[in-house]
Amino acid sequence: MIHPFQVFLSASPTVTKIVDVPPGPCTLVLSALGSGAAVSVGTSSAGTTSTNGLIVNAGQSITVPIPPGSGPVTLYGTGIGGTAIISSLISVPN
Image 1 (cartoon, rainbow, N blue to C red):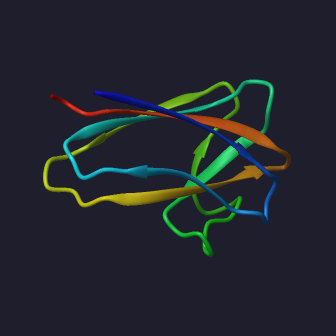
Image 2: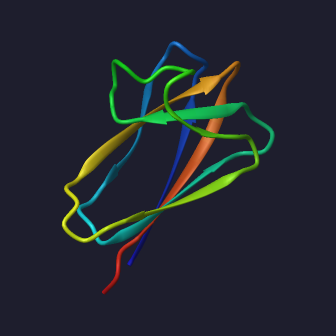
């Protein structure tokens, strides 16, 4: 099953919820829209900043395999130097 999501992110220091990732196994793909800013992604709504998260550059996609036994996690993000749009796609095996 595939679950797509898309979120508009304001520039730092505003932090916005991106997606709830289910327990593993699954695959998460994060893509930042090419015409926007880069995105900093983290697991804290209060502690994710433009300098300490997983960086997804504008126009870039990152694939994150979530292993079996992993618990659920919520990801948050903020635009680095401007506003951004990030897409997330979660693929869960049947």
